[in-house]
Length: 195
Image 1 (tube, rainbow, N blue to C red):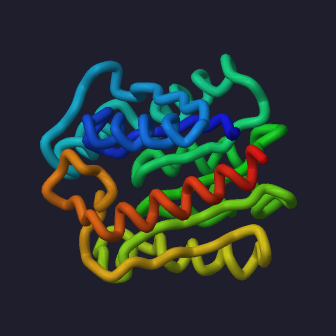
Image 2 (spheres, rainbow, N blue to C red):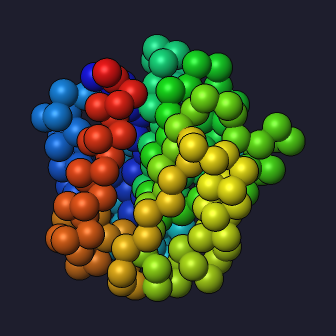
């Protein structure tokens, strides 16, 4: 099966993120789940992002890259929201990337170089169609541009609703139906890569 490096969202390494990683492991995948916050968690997106503001996005990217440096090359890079930033950076810039899973966020590919999305690296983007973070902050536009630029390799899945962290079962934003569908699609994606 696939080897996945999964980065948490802005609240930190919550029980819901850990449970998602365990679900992928139960499906036969190896999942590396680093803590980019060094043990801190936050009750809401605003306080989590305030912490990121204190330490800097560069620190988050550097911590993500440092974790990847100690792992095999053939990884699928995955991230929830804030975690999409290091995941997408590594998928676009690290030799040997096998795929990417971008949950609730997507960054314009130009943020990580002029070469666009790398050939032969499949990617899924998942988000809710009325999530103000995903829709109003440019992530949906970036995801659509990625799908257009990488036909056959990039897929965008939109779910009805307005929740941001909808696949984290430990949060009030959890949407059971959407989370189940997302998980099924992710496991099929990983089966295709690992098989």
